[in-house]
Length: 394
Image (tube, rainbow, N blue to C red; front, side, top):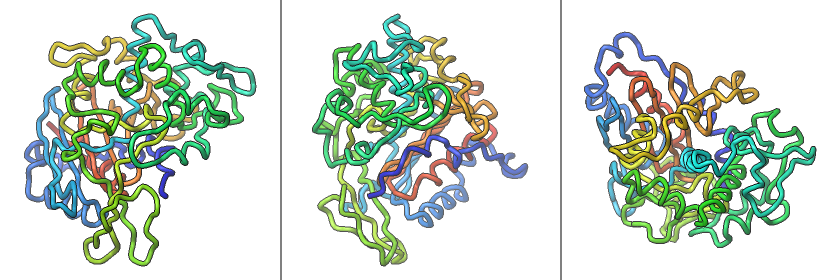
């Protein structure tokens, strides 16, 4: 089962800024997005990567400039992908968890640089004795490792074990040997701990807390973390592409049979709607149109259409270089959850079995882009498309 999905994906190397050629740069953004040449290019690249469906929304000047979709949300039902089709956004969820944490910081209830276990039902100290802080968790410098129990927690349906119960079990929170603050190491379980702190502060399960604090105020009415109550008819089916001659996966599969992929190159295996234990690290389900609302709020300094979810100072801190170790060598700057790709672009990527997501923003110009796809090989493509959009002239 392809579960080694997010420990590298937020590096966003595939989504690095791609300068356009001088000739191509002469074409304005909207004209380029709508051009038959660009539409044909997206379809061709989807076919080459065996990506069933893809949706894209572009923000310019803080408003949605263009939203479109290609291919299929469900191959068997021949249901087209649309800009309002829901899909698991994987690790892009982390920017929402970060926002929820910052809300409690704004209220004076959570110190980003104090021991996080002040908000947990158990003590959490590194073997060196050092405490772990929220800032370290937000920047992946808390020395928290994703152990075997994390990968084993993937299953069809919603989690059967509450977040607190899962994190409290021996061996589920593991540490790297290097003490907190000294090394950058991407951690999903770390964002589970942040989600638990939000649960304890709010008195609500993380899916409910996220909905009340962020999704509802931003008008993201159809987005949600839990599968229960989800509009399944509007949710894309995740697909795992299996090359011809390779064995089919035995986990996370849907009862629906596999379908022959384009050109007989293999099979598209439909996956179930699945989850894992640490819901706050990657289980938000949304559409490019609703994700664009969150991006617009961040570009607006924490406010969208008169509804403020973060102070401008919190947004500035979120999109500031936190000086995380090795970030410079890796080619990016680490903010709070977000990563700086250079030239003022901040981003987060996401990938899980059968899905891929990219979110990029440029606060100085008010531009942003969201790309979602329902294919196991889609991550390079969503990153490339996002970077190409960000490189265009207005």
